[in-house]
Length: 633
Image 1 (cartoon, rainbow, N blue to C red):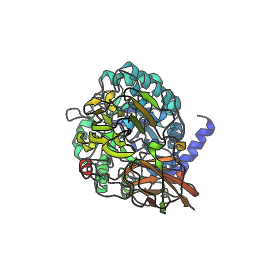
Image 2: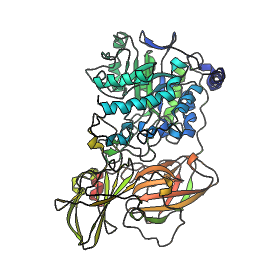
Image 3: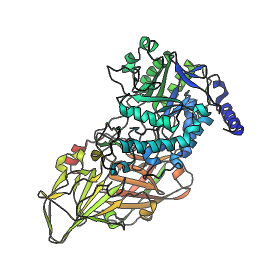
């Protein structure tokens, strides 16, 4: 780092809060970060890390610094970010470090605002993210062993971690940066296995020379301070701290830890995620309990921790993962101290008061909450069915191919077959993943989804010829909780040929709909009178005007199931089976003046195709998938 840059960092620290200077903070100089005597040290000064998880992939880059400043103003001194491999290398061999993947800018912002960094780049992260952060193209390599000591997987991981080091290696504390620890892998359960040793070696050989660590959920017979016998010098973190697990952090055990390392909890939960179907309802951690647990952590002087999450953000686009097949809802608000829109909550203020008083910190002022706006109701008009907007590059094959075989990662695939003499019998989709809409001559005849039960995969069809069968399959997110999975369980689309009365149907024409390009969406239209409800998945489009930008939620509570784009930005999925019925619209994606909205509705649209913008999430009681399907919705 140049003298000028170091001077800028120093000035930024003074502005961020000189009263906290007694605690070590990144200053652009080379330091040693060591662990001994049950404590963390910057050079010879004891420091306990109080971190908060902020994942740059879930927060628009324009807001990163605001969230970092809010973490510092709550009394935290470190940021813990997951990095998403599938966004950094979306296509095999094509790396991007721009916008939400500009990880160097994110870490530099942490340094400029006096925050240390606990880096969590994977390769596997979980995080309720699509395929736990793994890029889908890994599945196209036969025999690949995800999270295994397998040559192909390790080679791809080695290349990815090498690129991360190229971006961030000089931002380690050992080189004058803020990165004090680097986590490899995540919740592997076998902390010193041959696979974990191989991943550890990848990080070392890439050039990561600060403290390496793991994050492990632990087990009753494996306390968090057990030594990583196969990987000397690695700190083993134990996540999932709650009041119920305090016994595992018994102070006598901490004092007598055989490796002399402190105890780190990389994930002190502030809430929980929500899925569609069976819903894990947040808040999991009420404010009073969060305060009690934090007080306990503060009372034990050699404990370091990170709140998971400090700011949850959103699963924008098609990036929400799944938990045992249950897709993640788009909102990742998590009942965090800072909400999805960037507003500080009652939980934030309670934790700020507690930490500030306990550590006698003169905290900087809390950055102002963002402006939040309402958007008056506006109408949308039908813009044509999805199946009528066929992509030009059809793939023809005797047998149905999966999404990955077709070279597509996310979105939809349409499988088409024509029957000149008609179509009659029982159609069975077999292993379709995830959500299938079955149409005959443009009329929906069935919807199949594992959440509805296997009965939904079979349907009686009786259509005279000529008949056209269309099967639209939507990838709702690959599972995030990967415990050495066979790649076949993560593949999307049709996994085998559907059958008619038990006989395989062959001879398919397949169309890819990744819908990742705004040019693939229909043009904006004005409201139209007497617009009939379509009988197949269809686009709707419209516009609204703004004189001032502000954060807002688009209220989709009148709609059924689909995806929304605003000015070409994919806000994510909505689905009326969930408990949350809004999609967060960041102000930085809005225009002063006209804004274009496109909705892809997979089911029956509302009687009046309208949307409004509201200031708070609209929530209702969730509906179970099977009960929902039995109602014929």
